[in-house]
Image (tube, rainbow, N blue to C red; front, top):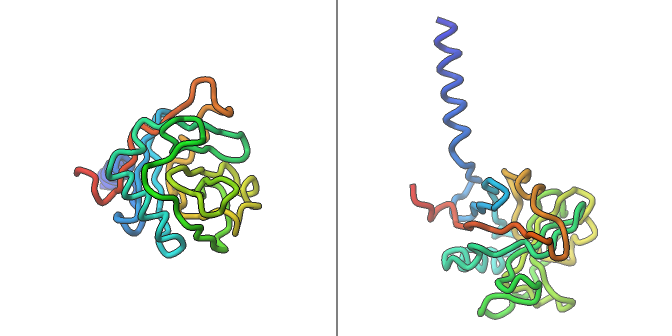
Length: 181
């Protein structure tokens, strides 16, 4: 009998591993499939940055992020994407967003809004921090609107460079609640 329980537990564990993680709220979770071979699950933080969260979900629903490269990837710091031109100068056709700074501490997997020197210039570009201390100085200066809850190993594999010689890309970014079952 114990052998059957072990077999059943193993089957349940393996089947659960095949199901993508969803944070507490699927409407505020995005799945980002990346060319490094996996899915990154991001919990969005509407209580911290409602405008930035709404923007990401709007663009995801339009397929805006699908196929966009990681154009700026600095080892030990962050991986930046969201520019349809791949140059770091582009954005969506929507107006820029006002800053939504908070005291949320930047750490490994934090999603921040990329912008110019103007705090109110974020549009579609975002970055994901590689380490706890690499982005800590950005706290209170760049809008935080999400946190990776699964799949950071796939961000760690993104090709480094400014720009990378052969950049990795977002294959598909979708709101978890919208995903086809």
